[in-house]
Length: 103
Image (cartoon, rainbow, N blue to C red):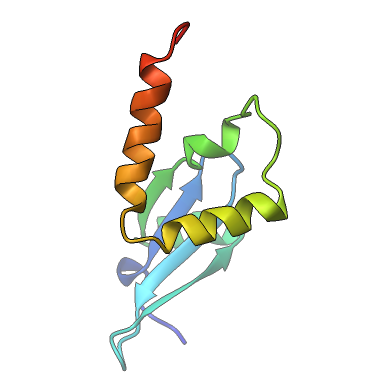
């Protein structure tokens, strides 16, 4: 489908150099998106497309100290989240950890 360049928004991830684009379909009004190359993105920008730059989430650069989650950990998390008072239990766990000696 062809849409005017000024109705396309280009997106460039500054962390990995990836180029994407999005536009609203003129027929159904739904969002449509896809990947692009830097060469095509430059051409579209020169033709009037808007440009957004963005970064990957900071969490992707984090390296936790603990062991990776296991399947058992995920099952226990799933079961804990099924409990109606799971959030209160979580807050209590955090409070207990903050008030323990050496914290």
